[in-house]
Amino acid sequence: MEFAGAWMQFARDKLPKQDFPVDAALLDDIVKLEAVDAASDIAYLSGSLVEGLGNPWSDLDVYVVTDRPPVGPTAFVDCGCMVSIHYVGELRVDYEYWPTTQVRDLADRLSAFEPGTGAIVNLFSEAEEQFVHRLVRYPLPIAGDPASLQAMFSLDTLNAYQIQIAVKRLDSMHEDLCGMIEGRNWDVALFAARELAAGAMDVYLHIRGNTNPSRKWRASLIRRYADDDDAFVKRFFDLQFPDARRLKADTASLFAYCRECIAYHAAIVRIAHRD
Amino acid sequence: VIEVETNAVPLVRYDVRRRRYGTVTWLIRKNDWFQIDRTTDIVWLACEDETSIDRIAARVADDLKIDLGEALAATILTVSRLQFHGLVEDVFDLPAEVSPSSRSMQRLQSE
Image 1 (cartoon, rainbow over the protein chains, first blue to last red):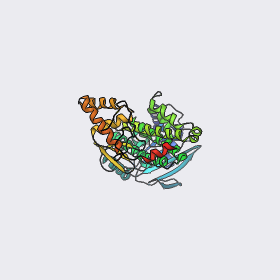
Image 2 (image 1 turned 45 degrees about the horizontal axis):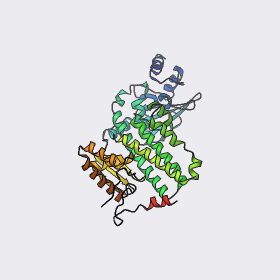
Image 3 (image 1 turned 120 degrees about the vertical axis):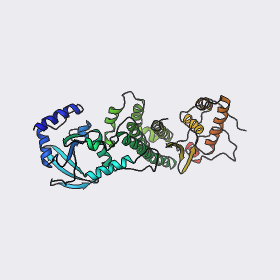
Image 4 (image 1 turned 45 degrees about the vertical axis):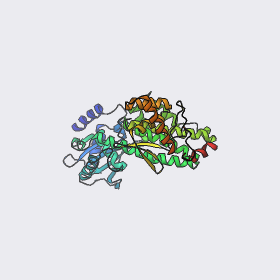
């Protein structure tokens, strides 16, 4: 419990101000449920709750970097890692097991990345990208010290990769939208234009330093990484909530809306290219 | 001979995107990729900002450190090429036999 007390102090100092559902007793349970041991494991809490993005229904993610398997009864392979699920009271706790060789492989892939060279390809699955983000930015250690793992990853390189791949996503979104416009598939184009603006905001957030790849927290990430009076943010919300009925009733207005979303994406790509 | 109104504003086509990769800048329309030089890039970015021909020329002169007359000639030539390849909306009356078609835009405008 001495360790738990020290950890809680660490969490209080480190965490954003929020309702964080972990107390010393729960932390003790978390360690025991999967027999987390500093001798063999580096384990840390992370995820939306730790990052200050979660809500009362969020689960708690525990990352265990180790070469041993999970011990819990409900374990399965998901997105390239073993996951073991436990329930502690109302809280669901997901343990993700990542072998050290796999973590090293992720680090090697990122190290080999150089912006503006080679093919523009996805280096990571979303789960892998999320793993790297959470390890580098928001680990709350419960066993061992993740510093040695963090040192394997460059935050700047991760961010540069995310900007490049997010711009690439815009390429296909833009192409899709142009095809829909040319095919006069207007109701589909309306959604595609809106998505393009949303994808552009994701690029903008990466430019502002966000490394969380999850799209569901976009609004919270905007609050975190952009100023209230940021012109790109204001325009983003205007483009996300147009008068859809009016647009659907008038093709010229809908086309103008599509053009506006395209211009918005172009303006953000210019920032990504540092123009 | 092309007649030019220097207050005309060339508009980029919605279906063209600009991308830079490493040191190379591209204009991309569907399956056509145009690698562009510095002058064209300055003109393109000015077009994205809905800038008139005379102001584009001023920007070119400023960025490339050349005199305004030379910059205006370069701007007109560049915009003509962009128009010829269907990358900007028609702004000049290019001779019909070399004028690029922009049928999809005509279709949209006729609706």
